[in-house]
Image (cartoon, rainbow over all chains, first blue to last red; front, side, top):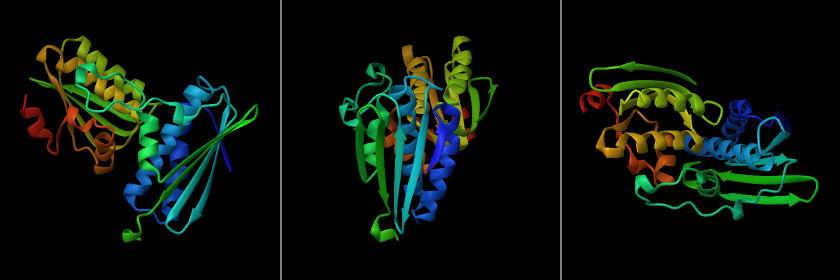
Length: 138
Length: 111
């Protein structure tokens, strides 16, 4: 498990860490990018919502590498933040009516094969993301 | 992320490289705002060397597009957006808000 300070300049370092893990799992470039983007969005949510700002707390990232499958587990000790509670992103809205924000959770749910959230009251939030390589392209 | 901009006769070209994420998006926003604050709303963003755009970066681009297209005074055109980044734009239904080009000269010439 690797610990990163809960601040935006950790994002590039976390990306490097999960990109390498995704490549080690044998994921193709599209799946690697899906992992990179989802983890970035999840970490931003930890900083912005669980901690409510930069430099409040740390984020812990661990990975489980299997052939054709990567599991990323993110932990934080901030306020509970359940991605299922985030309102659905409104699609097909005219540009002038588009309200900024709210795409992160939508991206995570659509790019990952599995998303599990667990909040342990008084202790920590645990977000588990699973990405599998489509079998046809292994 | 590195960013530079150049004022052309009919538009401004902003060249970005690296990651557009929560750490760097404010810098891009500042650059785009400084151009738009000078009443220049025809923007070409060269994304040839951009390898990552998070939703924060996406919102900065959308925000600029909203400002530029207001009163039909201009537009943001994106050049050489990598396939993975483009797929993420499309996934959240925002690819359609932008003209995407694979040729910088043509994009500049379209204004």
